[in-house]
Image (tube, rainbow, N blue to C red; front, side, top):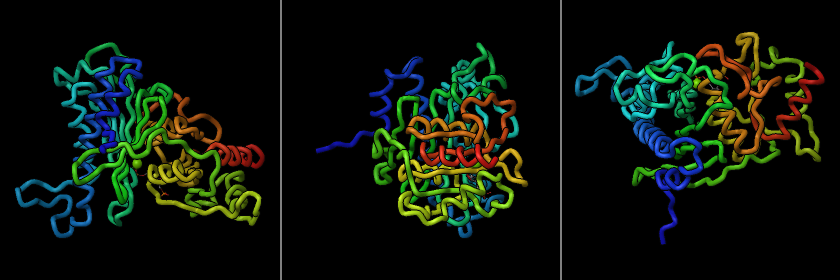
Length: 334
Ligand code: AHM
Ligand code: MG
């Protein structure tokens, strides 16, 4: 008996929950699913660049090889440009936003913001990376997309999610009605519902901080890093440190197992390292929808009014009780 629910079936089933015209979101999420499968097939060949050709060289068809993050960016852009629902995009790879000028996309009611390949330092070492996306309803009334369409608070997101290229490939998304995860069956090229209604445990024993930066953490964060290492049977300490350095992979693991992720302000990155629009807001939407907390340490991430496309913010996200413990330390020790 077949009990598989595919991503496309699931989206169609749920489309009536969407507050705007349902077919639009269905098409948009399908476009993301298609781009994800194309990027996935290229990511799976990443270790072969030395024998197939590096970025900048020509492949056998005489086409120039692209870096994987540029390739992923182009796939996402094309998917949105020709899909007709999106009037413009902004991404980590482009200094400015792109307003589409095709007759069908100019009429698109949405904008998409994405990090085409997050965790790019992990590409060369075959460790999990992923694509993060965030979708907003445009606020300008018509014509080409405007900057104001992109500088919206995270609370205005109509959909967000990520695709993680790990041992298997998963697409996880939310439209504000919970979080669902789909695993790609590579033999048939279809995303199948594998993680319905994902909930982040309220507690956990994993902390994901780059403690190499300990000396430039605030007093409260340093205290927390010391506290997690103390031995205490009642709270299950010491906790375990898990840090992949692909934000979405670290948060994905913590979402399933329970944990806290933090990339705070440091001396080298006084506003934190991670970008508000295409890293923090979409992951914050997922984390909150799964029952967790996403804050800068002082303010809910999704309530920040963005002022620029590549704005950075400190990020602290994860299991409710664990984030609250960090906030308590920040409150007490700064
Ligand atoms: P990227 O977008 O260039 O890949 O950088 C973002 C990544 C995040 O995924 C990750 O959390 C962070 O950089 C790791 O930074 P660090 O190596 O400083 O710990
Ligand atoms: Mg990134």
